[in-house]
Length: 486
Ligand code: FRU
Image (cartoon, rainbow, N blue to C red; front, side):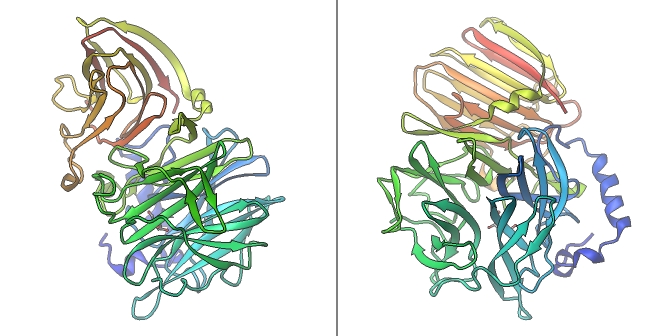
């Protein structure tokens, strides 16, 4: 299959059933399909969209191109859950079939209104000269899942002074009105986060760019304004941001800023703290979070990055969603940790105390959760996806004296995106014990330091013989190993 522009934007109804069947057959043979992460049945998944709770169910949608592992004509695919761990496939929810979204139903959010869910998204359109136009659009999903698009855009053009890179509306209820938080780009190619307001979800007025007084690169994608414990967290993906503002290695980082408050009258954050990386691993982007009705702030990210290559591209599928995480504040810092419900995945449990003279070596099915307590002032390694000779593995090196964790992706048969480096590092307080929680799933893993003080997400593509787990260190390590369900 040659992914010409025409093929990438071919209308959905022109793809034959036979083609999709073939694609499914090919994907079934993959050794990298995941066991407990949300992944696309076929094609490519990217941003999570419309994460919400309505009518007794959790709703989640994702950016989907179902016909190949390529960023083609996008739509929203819908899944639901009773427990945020086991997801039911509902099917396509918003397809690119109107004049306002003919070249892609792009990212957005959902907000419940009585029995219904209001979906807000960006319609991407290319005209005859392939010039981009973007519209902020709305749709209602009723309680039996039927979606009706609004006939007219909520916002039919970017504000004056902004380009058509204007997308990813997050709608939130704020005091007695609704706010829309959108990513934008000025005519001189500077990223901004734009705010609009509405009383009724349909009529919107532009409020202006959120004053942040710092470089936000050439474009901001997927902004989210959240409220945690009376404080504010702003999550966003700045593209092309100057590395002197914040050091990062991935093509584009997913970042956040914590603040005391959002001052709507002046459209600014009160006492913003230094911008930080949401994830210090290799593969996390487009995090979407929302203030759930149960009081938690819940988040989910895309495990993947734009503009990068992955070996599953040859197999006709790509990417997954992260575990659902709860965002909390502890001592003024943001923590992200898989929600308590994730424990439902645990099947069997084994515990060990590993002496410094020993090493743990265990053959796994690459589907497990590992909880480690590493004492202070020690160092050692954890090899995930290792082969028997230890030549190939995803290697975590820790040093609790310095308070450092390093993730090394060099020892692989499938080198990934080399231009962006193969090592990532996280720093925490020196001379303290470190707790590591590691979730491994076939070709991806999520690593949490100290219950979510730092997070590293990474894809890694093992060969069939890379199923060993190896742990070693200079002091006693307490290890709990859970096999997880498929
Ligand atoms: C981020 C993004 C969004 C856009 C969507 C298109 O990954 O580029 O800005 O809405 O993906 O799939």
